[in-house]
Image (cartoon, rainbow over the protein chains, first blue to last red):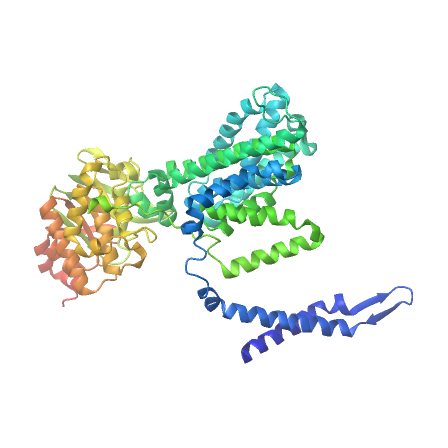
Length: 394
Length: 236
């Protein structure tokens, strides 16, 4: 306790020193003098002292604090409630009827959220399963979006005709990026992928003759529905349902993949590359499939994203985008599908619905992330691989 | 079965092997002994394809091995137990074993092989569902050997199986190595620092020093050799 107070006092002192020019000094231009507002300094100090004390208290009680929660409180994937049929039924019913109840604005936000879920699932393959840190994932998102936009702009391709091309081009991009970085690991890999992401964005920005540069490509069509004309309102709802399908497909595929032989090889590669090699795992093929399949999903939702906004421009695919997707994967818990979904709710929906707080929303967003990482460093949902049941071998 | 001919292997500009030649006949236990940094592990990694010799050739049943990738070499039946065990810590014991059978296509055969391994190492059967990382060092070594056995090796490359283990455990592991050799007629290349034990186990031995083979003979003769005694067995 004594130690805690001393620590807090040190922090308070330091904070007061830092804040001094901001909260105490006030320059009066008219009288050409400086006013000192000492009371502000005192109040800042007091606040900081108590916040720090409280923070330290909770930090030290972290273990006890969590022990009091029911066991496996956070192991949501094992929770009986979530697995129970009635819950799932009601949940899907609510989820399916949301666009019919809510105004278009919310449907649109949910579409964005689902796009991020698929992005998170795709990156989860690369980072969470195969352990290849990719900081340029938005590049594949961009490839998907621009493939659709350019095919539409130059050749008049519709959404459905472009979708497979967009996905395969992104997949190809993933493999092409994979080839030169096969030997790289960890930090070095991160730097190269970061560079790759920027290269793609810079090409889109500067190749004006082809990509229209920073002004982007407008007037992209919404996905067609057997030639039925949809107004803006119903086409958003249609997009919502399409994305549910896309998300379900992504969940199903990643789930099946992670339990497959390839999935096992990814995890083995992440755990120990030399051991994996001496077990006969082809590292080249395994890494490239991870990059390719990860990028594939980004390509698909890239096209959805472009279609949803009916517009693409390079500023949608900056490093910030890659960082958000990576945060989704890390915050959700590496390798966990449910984690990705929950983290998307926090990282995408929260800033959206905190808009009423105006400029404070990013502050709160940041604070939530810090608190999350302190109290739950392994992510929201700890990834538990399904362990193969060997009962029949006994 | 395997013949290594004058291989030179480099780490960047540093030459680790300066023309190593070995010959291994089917069914033998061969040991390669030497001091730290003599090139024992490098020799093993050159055989298993994790490193490629800059010059020289390796033949396995008259097939050039030095041109192949590690996964191809494993599929030919040459399996390495890497130095320091390197089991997958987040995989259960069973899953680790399953990784060993990664390239196997004869699934129905697997059950028999699991049974054989649990007979060799009964402790692994008890720990079947435990995570590999929670095993003790000795158990991890047993798991590493078992994992390699799951690949049905014709030639098993063991890299310092005694590393960091208690004498009792080492003894047990060496007994098993002999058992595998006699029961499965698996040829074994054993790299060891524990020269005494290795030579007692092996049929023939090679002594490597600074990337060169300086001696080769029957194991019991090497055990009697004055130079070997002095340099590696600690007997003056």
